[in-house]
Length: 149
Image (cartoon, rainbow, N blue to C red):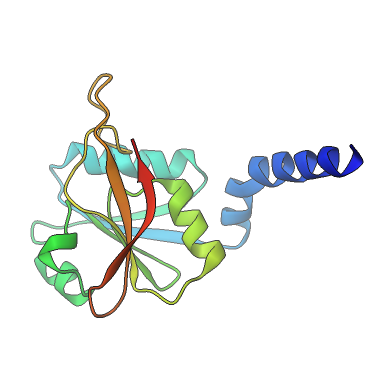
């Protein structure tokens, strides 16, 4: 019983302090987006709501940024971000970004290709399309990092 209580307490404490840990560690995320993209702005707000310190650069041409980040067209979405040496492409949930940083796998980054309804920043009423968060490497190979239904 004490182990369960301690485990629950630790999970609750760590879960509640995770946004603070991200800020305390000085972790910031740099987002590149189109100035006219509302869903990108909503995704930035999602990150801020989860404790990330966000810097935004607006540009009318994201293609050079995506190419420089090693993103293939199959991985592309509407905005590109960088955090702790990783690329974050598209509407990746903040919890998955935090998990990526914590686990620190040998990878290039995470992507949610396209713009699936119901992903962070893509709220469309009650619509929730299933989608996957893909972990990708420098060769463009992917594996499923998280799945949402």
